Length: 224
Length: 221
Image (cartoon, rainbow over all chains, first blue to last red; front, top):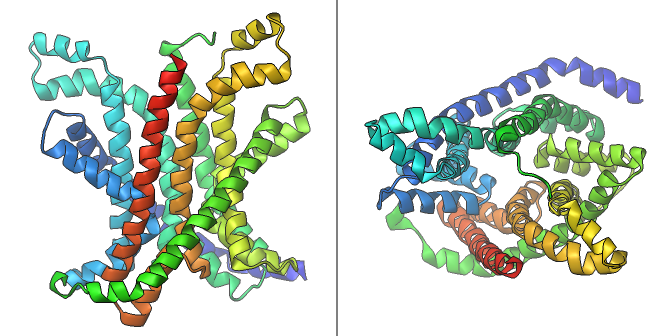
Protein backbone atom coordinates (compact mmCIF):
# COMPACT_ATOMS: atom_id res chain seq x y z
CA UNK A 1 0.00 0.00 0.00
CA UNK A 2 2.74 2.43 1.00
CA UNK A 3 4.71 1.55 -2.09
CA UNK A 4 1.69 2.38 -4.22
CA UNK A 5 1.39 5.83 -2.63
CA UNK A 6 5.10 6.50 -2.93
CA UNK A 7 4.90 5.60 -6.59
CA UNK A 8 1.95 7.96 -7.03
CA UNK A 9 3.86 10.70 -5.24
CA UNK A 10 6.90 10.22 -7.43
CA UNK A 11 4.60 10.48 -10.43
CA UNK A 12 3.53 13.96 -9.33
CA UNK A 13 7.09 15.05 -8.58
CA UNK A 14 7.14 17.47 -11.58
CA UNK A 15 4.14 19.18 -10.00
CA UNK A 16 6.09 19.58 -6.76
CA UNK A 17 9.12 20.96 -8.56
CA UNK A 18 6.88 23.51 -10.29
CA UNK A 19 5.60 24.52 -6.85
CA UNK A 20 9.14 24.73 -5.57
CA UNK A 21 9.99 27.02 -8.45
CA UNK A 22 7.04 29.26 -7.49
CA UNK A 23 8.25 29.37 -3.87
CA UNK A 24 11.71 30.36 -5.09
CA UNK A 25 10.26 33.02 -7.44
CA UNK A 26 8.04 34.60 -4.77
CA UNK A 27 10.68 34.62 -2.05
CA UNK A 28 13.55 35.53 -4.41
CA UNK A 29 11.75 38.56 -5.83
CA UNK A 30 10.53 39.69 -2.40
CA UNK A 31 13.91 39.25 -0.73
CA UNK A 32 15.62 41.24 -3.46
CA UNK A 33 13.13 44.11 -3.33
CA UNK A 34 12.79 43.86 0.44
CA UNK A 35 16.55 44.11 0.95
CA UNK A 36 16.74 47.28 -1.16
CA UNK A 37 13.78 48.92 0.58
CA UNK A 38 14.93 47.64 3.97
CA UNK A 39 18.40 49.15 3.61
CA UNK A 40 16.89 52.49 2.58
CA UNK A 41 14.48 52.50 5.53
CA UNK A 42 17.20 51.31 7.89
CA UNK A 43 19.53 54.15 6.89
CA UNK A 44 16.70 56.67 7.30
CA UNK A 45 15.69 55.10 10.60
CA UNK A 46 19.21 55.48 11.98
CA UNK A 47 19.40 59.05 10.68
CA UNK A 48 18.44 62.15 12.62
CA UNK A 49 15.33 62.88 10.58
CA UNK A 50 12.57 63.95 12.98
CA UNK A 51 9.76 63.08 10.59
CA UNK A 52 10.88 59.87 8.88
CA UNK A 53 12.33 58.16 11.93
CA UNK A 54 9.11 57.87 13.97
CA UNK A 55 7.08 57.29 10.81
CA UNK A 56 9.13 54.26 9.77
CA UNK A 57 9.21 53.09 13.38
CA UNK A 58 5.42 53.16 13.62
CA UNK A 59 5.01 51.31 10.30
CA UNK A 60 7.50 48.64 11.35
CA UNK A 61 5.60 48.20 14.62
CA UNK A 62 2.29 47.78 12.79
CA UNK A 63 3.77 45.16 10.47
CA UNK A 64 5.60 43.32 13.24
CA UNK A 65 2.54 43.36 15.46
CA UNK A 66 0.15 41.62 13.06
CA UNK A 67 0.32 38.10 11.62
CA UNK A 68 1.64 37.83 8.07
CA UNK A 69 -1.50 35.92 7.08
CA UNK A 70 -3.66 38.90 8.06
CA UNK A 71 -1.39 41.24 6.08
CA UNK A 72 -1.71 39.01 3.02
CA UNK A 73 -5.50 38.99 3.34
CA UNK A 74 -5.59 42.78 3.79
CA UNK A 75 -3.52 43.37 0.65
CA UNK A 76 -5.32 40.76 -1.40
CA UNK A 77 -8.90 41.65 -0.41
CA UNK A 78 -8.78 45.33 0.45
CA UNK A 79 -6.59 46.90 -2.25
CA UNK A 80 -9.18 45.93 -4.94
CA UNK A 81 -11.68 48.14 -3.10
CA UNK A 82 -9.38 51.08 -3.84
CA UNK A 83 -9.49 50.09 -7.51
CA UNK A 84 -6.11 48.32 -7.49
CA UNK A 85 -6.67 44.86 -8.89
CA UNK A 86 -3.97 42.41 -8.03
CA UNK A 87 -3.33 38.84 -8.99
CA UNK A 88 -2.51 36.50 -6.14
CA UNK A 89 1.16 36.40 -7.21
CA UNK A 90 1.53 40.21 -7.18
CA UNK A 91 -0.27 40.50 -3.83
CA UNK A 92 2.02 37.82 -2.39
CA UNK A 93 5.18 39.57 -3.59
CA UNK A 94 4.00 42.95 -2.27
CA UNK A 95 3.10 41.52 1.14
CA UNK A 96 6.35 39.58 1.49
CA UNK A 97 8.45 42.51 0.25
CA UNK A 98 6.89 44.77 2.86
CA UNK A 99 7.47 42.20 5.60
CA UNK A 100 11.08 41.70 4.51
CA UNK A 101 11.72 45.45 4.36
CA UNK A 102 10.41 45.93 7.90
CA UNK A 103 12.60 43.23 9.45
CA UNK A 104 15.68 44.15 7.40
CA UNK A 105 15.21 47.82 8.29
CA UNK A 106 15.52 46.94 11.98
CA UNK A 107 18.64 44.85 11.39
CA UNK A 108 20.33 47.54 9.30
CA UNK A 109 19.44 50.31 11.76
CA UNK A 110 20.86 48.26 14.65
CA UNK A 111 24.02 47.63 12.62
CA UNK A 112 24.50 51.33 11.89
CA UNK A 113 23.90 52.26 15.52
CA UNK A 114 26.55 49.73 16.59
CA UNK A 115 29.23 51.80 14.80
CA UNK A 116 30.86 54.08 17.40
CA UNK A 117 29.97 57.78 16.82
CA UNK A 118 33.67 58.65 16.77
CA UNK A 119 33.91 56.91 13.39
CA UNK A 120 31.40 59.26 11.83
CA UNK A 121 33.05 62.27 13.44
CA UNK A 122 36.46 61.19 12.17
CA UNK A 123 35.03 60.63 8.69
CA UNK A 124 33.37 64.05 8.74
CA UNK A 125 36.56 65.76 9.87
CA UNK A 126 38.53 64.21 6.99
CA UNK A 127 36.08 65.99 4.70
CA UNK A 128 33.90 63.11 3.48
CA UNK A 129 30.38 64.08 2.47
CA UNK A 130 27.39 62.46 4.17
CA UNK A 131 27.00 59.90 1.40
CA UNK A 132 30.72 59.13 1.36
CA UNK A 133 30.72 58.67 5.14
CA UNK A 134 27.94 56.12 4.73
CA UNK A 135 29.54 54.36 1.76
CA UNK A 136 33.15 54.11 2.98
CA UNK A 137 33.00 54.25 6.77
CA UNK A 138 29.63 53.43 8.30
CA UNK A 139 28.08 50.73 6.10
CA UNK A 140 31.15 48.46 5.79
CA UNK A 141 31.35 48.30 9.58
CA UNK A 142 27.59 48.01 10.03
CA UNK A 143 27.43 45.16 7.56
CA UNK A 144 29.77 43.12 9.66
CA UNK A 145 27.25 43.20 12.51
CA UNK A 146 24.19 42.92 10.25
CA UNK A 147 25.14 40.12 7.89
CA UNK A 148 24.56 37.05 10.14
CA UNK A 149 21.09 38.15 11.33
CA UNK A 150 20.29 39.19 7.75
CA UNK A 151 20.88 35.66 6.45
CA UNK A 152 18.90 34.29 9.40
CA UNK A 153 16.07 36.64 8.50
CA UNK A 154 16.13 35.38 4.91
CA UNK A 155 15.44 31.88 6.20
CA UNK A 156 12.46 33.14 8.22
CA UNK A 157 11.11 34.98 5.17
CA UNK A 158 11.44 31.97 2.86
CA UNK A 159 9.48 29.98 5.43
CA UNK A 160 6.90 32.78 5.73
CA UNK A 161 6.38 32.60 1.97
CA UNK A 162 4.45 29.36 2.58
CA UNK A 163 1.63 31.50 4.00
CA UNK A 164 0.81 32.98 0.57
CA UNK A 165 -0.55 29.57 -0.43
CA UNK A 166 -3.67 30.69 1.49
CA UNK A 167 -4.64 33.13 -1.28
CA UNK A 168 -4.11 30.52 -3.99
CA UNK A 169 -0.52 31.05 -5.07
CA UNK A 170 0.49 27.55 -6.21
CA UNK A 171 3.74 27.31 -4.27
CA UNK A 172 5.11 24.08 -2.88
CA UNK A 173 2.86 24.22 0.22
CA UNK A 174 -0.21 24.66 -1.99
CA UNK A 175 0.93 21.74 -4.17
CA UNK A 176 1.09 19.63 -1.02
CA UNK A 177 -2.39 20.73 -0.02
CA UNK A 178 -3.75 19.91 -3.50
CA UNK A 179 -1.98 16.57 -3.61
CA UNK A 180 -3.22 15.45 -0.21
CA UNK A 181 -6.80 15.63 -1.50
CA UNK A 182 -5.84 12.96 -4.05
CA UNK A 183 -3.23 10.92 -2.17
CA UNK A 184 -4.58 10.60 1.37
CA UNK A 185 -1.16 10.14 2.98
CA UNK A 186 -0.51 13.40 4.82
CA UNK A 187 2.75 12.22 6.38
CA UNK A 188 4.25 11.32 3.00
CA UNK A 189 2.97 14.34 1.12
CA UNK A 190 3.91 16.97 3.68
CA UNK A 191 7.07 15.08 4.53
CA UNK A 192 8.11 15.64 0.92
CA UNK A 193 7.08 19.31 1.08
CA UNK A 194 9.05 19.75 4.32
CA UNK A 195 12.06 18.08 2.71
CA UNK A 196 12.00 20.54 -0.17
CA UNK A 197 11.96 23.50 2.25
CA UNK A 198 14.69 21.84 4.30
CA UNK A 199 16.95 21.60 1.26
CA UNK A 200 16.72 25.38 0.79
CA UNK A 201 16.70 26.56 4.41
CA UNK A 202 19.17 24.29 6.19
CA UNK A 203 22.26 25.39 4.22
CA UNK A 204 21.27 29.02 4.81
CA UNK A 205 20.98 28.44 8.58
CA UNK A 206 24.45 26.86 8.56
CA UNK A 207 25.75 29.82 6.57
CA UNK A 208 24.26 32.24 9.09
CA UNK A 209 25.93 30.39 11.97
CA UNK A 210 29.28 30.35 10.19
CA UNK A 211 29.05 34.03 9.35
CA UNK A 212 28.32 34.76 12.99
CA UNK A 213 31.49 32.95 14.06
CA UNK A 214 33.61 34.54 11.36
CA UNK A 215 32.30 38.07 11.74
CA UNK A 216 32.68 38.15 15.50
CA UNK A 217 36.28 36.95 15.21
CA UNK A 218 37.69 40.46 15.63
CA UNK A 219 35.45 41.16 18.56
CA UNK A 220 36.24 38.15 20.72
CA UNK A 221 34.92 38.66 24.20
CA UNK A 222 36.45 36.39 26.79
CA UNK A 223 33.94 33.99 28.27
CA UNK A 224 34.87 34.64 31.87
CA UNK B 1 -14.27 52.52 0.21
CA UNK B 2 -13.54 54.37 3.43
CA UNK B 3 -16.85 56.22 3.25
CA UNK B 4 -18.60 52.87 3.30
CA UNK B 5 -16.55 51.54 6.21
CA UNK B 6 -19.25 50.00 8.32
CA UNK B 7 -18.74 50.32 12.05
CA UNK B 8 -22.26 49.08 12.77
CA UNK B 9 -21.47 45.66 11.31
CA UNK B 10 -18.25 45.51 13.31
CA UNK B 11 -20.30 46.12 16.46
CA UNK B 12 -22.71 43.44 15.34
CA UNK B 13 -19.83 40.97 14.98
CA UNK B 14 -18.10 42.11 18.17
CA UNK B 15 -19.25 39.11 20.25
CA UNK B 16 -17.69 36.81 17.63
CA UNK B 17 -14.45 38.80 17.67
CA UNK B 18 -14.28 38.78 21.47
CA UNK B 19 -14.85 35.02 21.53
CA UNK B 20 -12.17 34.55 18.90
CA UNK B 21 -9.81 36.93 20.73
CA UNK B 22 -10.18 34.73 23.77
CA UNK B 23 -9.53 31.65 21.60
CA UNK B 24 -6.32 33.19 20.22
CA UNK B 25 -5.21 33.99 23.78
CA UNK B 26 -5.76 30.51 25.15
CA UNK B 27 -4.44 28.69 22.09
CA UNK B 28 -1.20 30.66 22.13
CA UNK B 29 -1.05 30.47 25.93
CA UNK B 30 -1.31 26.68 25.78
CA UNK B 31 1.28 26.62 22.99
CA UNK B 32 3.63 28.80 25.02
CA UNK B 33 3.33 26.60 28.08
CA UNK B 34 3.93 23.48 26.01
CA UNK B 35 6.84 25.11 24.21
CA UNK B 36 8.49 26.01 27.53
CA UNK B 37 8.31 22.37 28.64
CA UNK B 38 9.45 20.95 25.29
CA UNK B 39 12.12 23.63 24.96
CA UNK B 40 13.57 22.98 28.41
CA UNK B 41 13.61 19.23 27.74
CA UNK B 42 15.19 19.60 24.30
CA UNK B 43 17.77 22.04 25.66
CA UNK B 44 18.62 19.67 28.50
CA UNK B 45 19.08 16.81 26.04
CA UNK B 46 21.09 18.99 23.65
CA UNK B 47 23.69 20.14 26.18
CA UNK B 48 23.62 16.88 28.16
CA UNK B 49 26.30 14.21 28.14
CA UNK B 50 24.45 11.51 26.20
CA UNK B 51 25.52 11.69 22.57
CA UNK B 52 22.44 9.92 21.26
CA UNK B 53 19.98 12.20 23.10
CA UNK B 54 21.99 15.26 22.13
CA UNK B 55 21.92 14.19 18.50
CA UNK B 56 18.17 13.54 18.62
CA UNK B 57 17.47 16.96 20.14
CA UNK B 58 19.71 18.57 17.52
CA UNK B 59 17.86 16.82 14.71
CA UNK B 60 14.52 17.96 16.16
CA UNK B 61 15.63 21.57 16.52
CA UNK B 62 17.22 21.80 13.06
CA UNK B 63 14.34 20.14 11.21
CA UNK B 64 11.79 22.41 12.89
CA UNK B 65 13.84 25.52 12.16
CA UNK B 66 14.31 24.59 8.51
CA UNK B 67 10.63 24.05 7.65
CA UNK B 68 7.63 26.42 7.75
CA UNK B 69 5.08 26.18 10.56
CA UNK B 70 2.28 25.92 8.00
CA UNK B 71 3.84 22.76 6.53
CA UNK B 72 4.28 21.32 10.04
CA UNK B 73 0.67 22.13 10.81
CA UNK B 74 -0.58 20.38 7.64
CA UNK B 75 1.80 17.50 8.35
CA UNK B 76 -0.01 16.83 11.63
CA UNK B 77 -3.47 17.81 10.40
CA UNK B 78 -3.42 15.53 7.35
CA UNK B 79 -0.78 13.09 8.56
CA UNK B 80 -1.98 11.95 11.98
CA UNK B 81 -5.35 10.63 10.70
CA UNK B 82 -3.52 8.46 8.15
CA UNK B 83 -1.75 6.86 11.12
CA UNK B 84 -5.13 6.29 12.73
CA UNK B 85 -4.68 9.06 15.33
CA UNK B 86 -7.75 11.27 15.53
CA UNK B 87 -7.35 14.61 17.29
CA UNK B 88 -9.53 17.70 17.43
CA UNK B 89 -8.43 20.73 15.38
CA UNK B 90 -7.58 22.61 18.56
CA UNK B 91 -5.35 19.78 19.82
CA UNK B 92 -3.61 19.52 16.45
CA UNK B 93 -3.07 23.29 16.40
CA UNK B 94 -1.64 23.39 19.91
CA UNK B 95 0.58 20.39 19.11
CA UNK B 96 2.03 22.14 16.05
CA UNK B 97 2.55 25.44 17.91
CA UNK B 98 4.16 23.63 20.84
CA UNK B 99 6.60 21.62 18.75
CA UNK B 100 7.44 24.59 16.55
CA UNK B 101 8.08 27.09 19.33
CA UNK B 102 9.73 24.42 21.50
CA UNK B 103 12.66 24.27 19.08
CA UNK B 104 13.19 28.03 19.26
CA UNK B 105 12.74 28.01 23.05
CA UNK B 106 15.45 25.36 23.34
CA UNK B 107 17.90 27.64 21.56
CA UNK B 108 16.92 30.64 23.69
CA UNK B 109 17.32 28.70 26.95
CA UNK B 110 20.64 27.26 25.78
CA UNK B 111 21.95 30.74 24.98
CA UNK B 112 20.81 31.90 28.43
CA UNK B 113 22.58 29.10 30.28
CA UNK B 114 25.74 29.35 28.21
CA UNK B 115 25.89 33.10 28.78
CA UNK B 116 26.83 32.45 32.41
CA UNK B 117 30.64 32.44 32.65
CA UNK B 118 31.99 29.15 33.92
CA UNK B 119 34.01 30.97 36.58
CA UNK B 120 30.73 31.79 38.32
CA UNK B 121 29.93 28.12 38.75
CA UNK B 122 33.45 27.38 39.95
CA UNK B 123 33.31 30.24 42.43
CA UNK B 124 29.96 28.96 43.72
CA UNK B 125 31.31 25.42 44.07
CA UNK B 126 34.37 26.61 45.94
CA UNK B 127 32.26 28.63 48.36
CA UNK B 128 30.48 25.39 49.21
CA UNK B 129 27.08 25.84 47.53
CA UNK B 130 25.38 22.62 46.47
CA UNK B 131 23.72 22.12 43.07
CA UNK B 132 20.31 23.49 44.07
CA UNK B 133 21.80 26.49 45.85
CA UNK B 134 23.99 27.22 42.81
CA UNK B 135 20.96 27.09 40.55
CA UNK B 136 18.85 29.17 42.91
CA UNK B 137 21.33 31.88 43.83
CA UNK B 138 23.91 32.03 41.03
CA UNK B 139 22.79 30.59 37.71
CA UNK B 140 19.05 31.17 37.42
CA UNK B 141 18.96 34.83 38.53
CA UNK B 142 21.50 35.67 35.83
CA UNK B 143 20.12 33.31 33.19
CA UNK B 144 16.57 34.66 33.56
CA UNK B 145 17.80 38.19 33.00
CA UNK B 146 19.35 37.13 29.69
CA UNK B 147 16.52 34.77 28.68
CA UNK B 148 13.36 36.71 29.49
CA UNK B 149 13.48 39.36 26.71
CA UNK B 150 13.97 36.83 23.85
CA UNK B 151 11.41 34.56 25.52
CA UNK B 152 8.82 37.33 25.41
CA UNK B 153 9.85 37.97 21.81
CA UNK B 154 9.10 34.33 21.04
CA UNK B 155 5.72 34.74 22.77
CA UNK B 156 4.92 37.57 20.34
CA UNK B 157 5.91 35.33 17.41
CA UNK B 158 3.75 32.55 18.83
CA UNK B 159 0.64 34.75 19.02
CA UNK B 160 1.15 35.81 15.40
CA UNK B 161 1.82 32.22 14.33
CA UNK B 162 -1.47 31.13 15.86
CA UNK B 163 -3.15 32.99 12.95
CA UNK B 164 -2.23 30.01 10.76
CA UNK B 165 -4.60 27.85 12.78
CA UNK B 166 -7.42 29.63 10.94
CA UNK B 167 -6.36 27.60 7.89
CA UNK B 168 -7.47 24.40 9.62
CA UNK B 169 -10.75 26.21 10.43
CA UNK B 170 -10.15 26.86 14.11
CA UNK B 171 -12.31 29.78 15.25
CA UNK B 172 -9.65 32.34 16.24
CA UNK B 173 -9.06 36.01 15.38
CA UNK B 174 -8.04 35.61 11.74
CA UNK B 175 -10.88 33.15 11.20
CA UNK B 176 -13.30 35.78 12.55
CA UNK B 177 -12.14 38.12 9.78
CA UNK B 178 -12.62 35.35 7.24
CA UNK B 179 -16.11 34.63 8.53
CA UNK B 180 -17.06 38.29 8.24
CA UNK B 181 -15.62 38.36 4.71
CA UNK B 182 -17.57 35.34 3.57
CA UNK B 183 -20.88 36.22 5.28
CA UNK B 184 -21.06 39.94 4.49
CA UNK B 185 -18.22 40.37 2.02
CA UNK B 186 -16.59 43.01 4.20
CA UNK B 187 -12.90 42.10 4.17
CA UNK B 188 -11.76 45.60 5.20
CA UNK B 189 -13.89 45.67 8.32
CA UNK B 190 -13.16 42.03 9.16
CA UNK B 191 -9.40 41.84 8.73
CA UNK B 192 -8.67 45.34 10.08
CA UNK B 193 -10.60 44.46 13.25
CA UNK B 194 -8.58 41.24 13.55
CA UNK B 195 -5.38 43.23 13.07
CA UNK B 196 -6.43 45.67 15.79
CA UNK B 197 -6.87 42.86 18.32
CA UNK B 198 -3.46 41.40 17.39
CA UNK B 199 -1.88 44.85 17.86
CA UNK B 200 -3.45 45.01 21.31
CA UNK B 201 -1.63 41.80 22.28
CA UNK B 202 1.57 42.93 20.53
CA UNK B 203 1.82 46.28 22.29
CA UNK B 204 1.07 44.73 25.71
CA UNK B 205 3.78 42.10 25.27
CA UNK B 206 6.18 44.72 23.93
CA UNK B 207 5.60 46.94 26.96
CA UNK B 208 6.21 43.91 29.17
CA UNK B 209 9.48 43.23 27.33
CA UNK B 210 10.67 46.81 27.88
CA UNK B 211 9.68 46.68 31.51
CA UNK B 212 11.45 43.38 32.11
CA UNK B 213 14.56 44.57 30.32
CA UNK B 214 14.81 47.69 32.47
CA UNK B 215 13.97 45.86 35.62
CA UNK B 216 16.37 42.95 35.08
CA UNK B 217 19.31 45.07 33.99
CA UNK B 218 18.72 47.10 37.13
CA UNK B 219 18.77 43.91 39.18
CA UNK B 220 22.02 42.81 37.63
CA UNK B 221 23.99 45.96 38.37
